[in-house]
Length: 474
Ligand code: GLU
Image 1: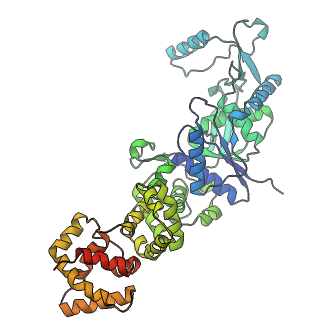
Image 2 (image 1 turned 135 degrees about the vertical axis):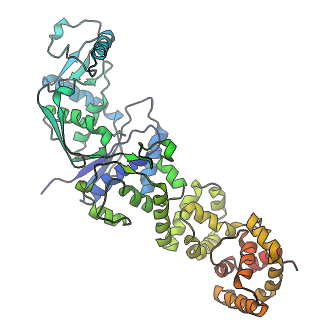
Image 3 (image 1 turned 90 degrees about the vertical axis):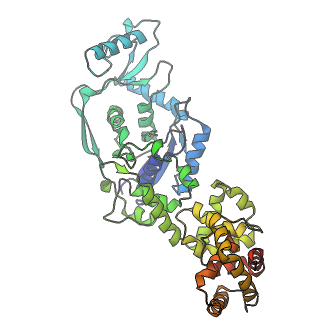
């Protein structure tokens, strides 16, 4: 039996969950889930100055909201420093690492010399083979990895292909600082090994690290995980995605009213494809996802495409489920907490009844909530400019004539009300629009809404008639 697939997502908690990080997590998740494997979560919190608890919370919240579940508890990299030190010393014992006693001045001179000679800055190996008995007593040494100097390091990468790095280009990396703190590449290798990670899927910006990490694996006699370095996400203009293009944090996409399923679908298509399929379920993604179907070139973030896709998801989400999304969204929306506080069971029933009409007109939950605002409005309704104009242009009078017609309708259902209004329109020689627009203004305070007879029914007899009476003037 082959060993289980184990992937991991390893964010640094220095801000929010970056949208690119979310895509990396999605690929790790889809790959593991499709193979009955596990996705682990490791918080790379060794940079104590920049790592914050708030960022850890934001990352966990972001992943949870996106539906990307991890297995077991999140691992703190910082908490494992002792184990990292142990491996640094093991490398030392094996002759795969050495103490380096260079002073900051010596390193600076090395740097200046390389610069003057226009060479890349590299450690020159001063202490690589030097007898430590000649070490200056005052200098606390670092531990450097004894990187191979001949040959090449090869990464068979699923997205990038075969990547060959000449070993002469990689110098002897510090793995333990003089204060005893492990450095990044050592920590990553030790953690991935100890966590049993079989597949590393991450951004292509880690490709050089991958070569250095491979050398450390080999020096420890550990098997090197299978590697995939995913191309970066660019903005619509082709430059690396940055703040000026738009939101970078997943929580901002949540606040903009995207559905997690739509964002998963959209993110999956950034760098991965399955034929010409643009819209697919998360189940299909999990079923179809393979590392070899990842592209090699950067993808462009298209905000309009995401919005359209989200509109599609909103229209195709069952009403009750969409209501759950809307309620979960309210705390994150502008003015949403207040609306949520006013959402009792009766209001939920109204929202549910109105959902079919509302969702046809919304690409985001922000728009959906905006569309539902008329349900929460209290009398007398405030009118937007267009609504006010409709009322002034004969709307008031039309409503005055219509009020008794509606009040006399047999029952308060969209069907009966529509029949009554149509009969009235015919008798008065009016086009239906001449009645529907004033009704819409009076009932919603705007000029756009779901079908007006649905609006009448959802509001209920008393509230609807009162709103109409408020605006009815002969
Ligand atoms: N912590 C790194 C980052 O946030 C990821 C390291 C890795 O995946 O190996 O970019």
